[in-house]
View: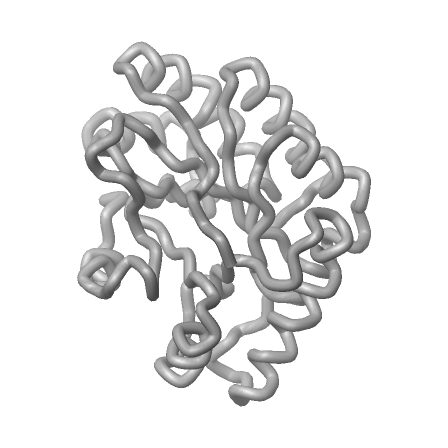
Length: 212
């Protein structure tokens, strides 16, 4: 397993004002990001772990899940984390028309707006799938498209020890945006081991510097 995919390396060649894969490479900062939540079992435990390590993160929430668990969305914002848009229902974007994709994004933004007062949010496409027409729409509207540079691989649903071995064999670099998920237990096990190790290496943890 390799946490750095060829696709993300290629996307990283695009201007950062269009597509975010890394941030502030010169600073010893890591950017933790979580997709697919909020989840009533897993998100609270992650928030407690982040608080213990004085870490800020970015949560790319599914609108449907945010509407079902508003208390968790409020907590995410109150504890200083960033809300991002991960679509309303997490469909396969490649099977939708452009109008259908835009509707997914708009509906999720409408769910999130009351929590942080923002009409538009940085967008991370489900499964990282985005066609050029949708990308061009986001560029024209100055909506940040937030990908990642470092994949924890926690969605593989495998053994946590394998993820930790990969992280130690291929350590993140300053400015890396780390992809994780808060709809399962692996991200918590992963971070329980890696947050102390990364902090001992002098890293700090911030939300993505996005202003949609």
